[in-house]
Length: 458
Ligand code: ADP
Ligand code: MG
Image (cartoon, rainbow, N blue to C red; front, side, top):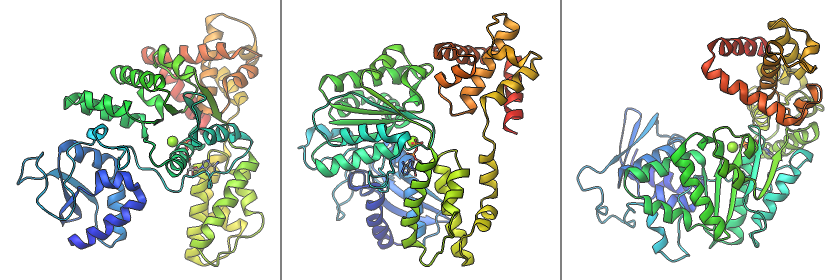
């Protein structure tokens, strides 16, 4: 590969990672060489290298391969011939920035927000709205208008693959289009922690604080990640408060409601609950069909001449109920396969090609099945699962069943409560917590759980 190829690839990367990220992270990279499948780049600092490696290496590798270079791995090393902090030799481009946190010194216009890349496909236009997600969508829309802050934070939660990240990116895109001067910072909670730890190590904690306090909109994805990570939580809490005090919008996502995130400090929980908490419910048939129809429209331009038999989409929407990501994956595979073999996509083809996915989605576990298995295992009566007895020999298996119901089905705590003889959702939560606690100390229980899980999931 030549420097020229890299030049072209770089331009392509703008589309992938967005202008801001490009200027901050990609432009300063200097291509060194490509040997035996390893592409090497020079970076100004080791922090820079780490960050690029964590956040953009996959994009870079993929793009290099698309351009015809055979790259298995990309590596970043601080330039050997010169001190890390010195500006690059007088090449054409602007000198690399040593650290991105110097932002606040610059005028509001040409600022770059060192967040995670936004996926250009995740927009409001491509988000299909249905009953299960209409509230979350409406709230996201409201935030994306960028008007006065009415609820803070917006807390989106829901199971995996239901569109949380999609909505967050959509908000960021929309805000950037409507108000380009706004400083919108999107990142995952994991990246927040990573940056924090890095700042501690490099003694740049003031820069870190300044950066996070100088944004207009902060979006942190998958916040459950910082549970149990004490100093990160602490810093997050302070950042959060500082921004709320300045009336800056915060958007948070998690895989469960604030109150249900284990090992998250209570003061953070209550702060997170102060704004608007909305959940994305598991998809229903109509939503799944809508999403499939929309994806098919998109694919049509890619795979010209493909014919889709009647009933295939309905079949998929009916059978694949796990999450949208799986649904999308199924469709992609189906189209790729059909275009390879050049055949019409019939119901039979779909069944063949997606056999594994269909089988996996088939086993939709019910709470009743869980109760039955657990009762069997502990040799108690099924009726005791829903009955009022409180002796340990019955109460404990009941709690185990509650725990498994929470883990293995998409049912909410109140729904689970109803199936356990109309118990309150707090009772279920207590049961789930109890088992979570015991699991780490009681190895017999841990074994039982593993066995039950295996039995239930086949
Ligand atoms: P989460 O962050 O909740 O785990 P994602 O936002 O990553 O889920 O969504 C998983 C995939 O499903 C993405 O490709 C996303 O575009 C798609 N998706 C989810 N919900 C919808 C929707 N309502 N309309 C269109 N695509 C969706
Ligand atoms: Mg996500």
